[in-house]
Image 1 (cartoon, rainbow, N blue to C red):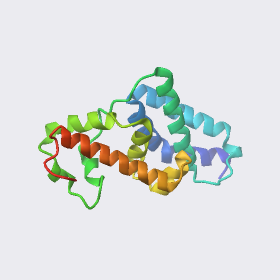
Image 2: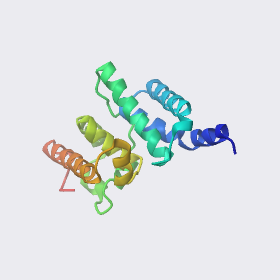
Image 3: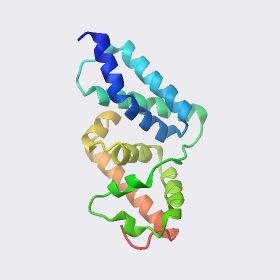
Image 4: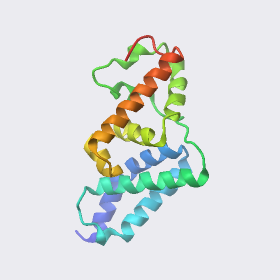
Amino acid sequence: MNERENFEDCYIKLANKIYGVAYKMVNNHQDALDIVQEVFLRAYKNWNNFKGLSKISTYLYRIAVNLSYDFLRKKNKLRKVENIGFENWSNLVSSVKFEDCIKDEEIIEEIKKEIDNLTEKQKVIFILKTYEELTYEEIASILRKRVGTIKATYFQSLQKLRENLKKKGVMKNEM
């Protein structure tokens, strides 16, 4: 297989995942598509320089996260999470029956608002862990942080969500 075929295979395999991360961060279809295009354009330009010290997916996620941050800074806007499916919430904490903590499905909007209130750092870690189902090690590699920092930030985001949802009366009992 030649270099171009390798890159095309990489694009086919990872473009949708990169789009998912970008979309969840910028909350706009067209902007997310632009970010995906820029991710793969940058990756293609540097394809020969990729040393393989990390997985290619880690490299592409890192570019996507950085471009999303740049986009948000330039636009000076906060991301709103409007299209996050409730079905993914059941994977939030495997030992917890999250659906038992929710009064009814209308409360999902309150949950989305609280996700939007997380810091940028908390949101990206939350998205990569919860929705992309990446390991702490993969997230640490993408964000160039220590695994302990990633775990602590994820835990803090969960705590913040729990506390705020409990204050609003959204949760029936402790998660």
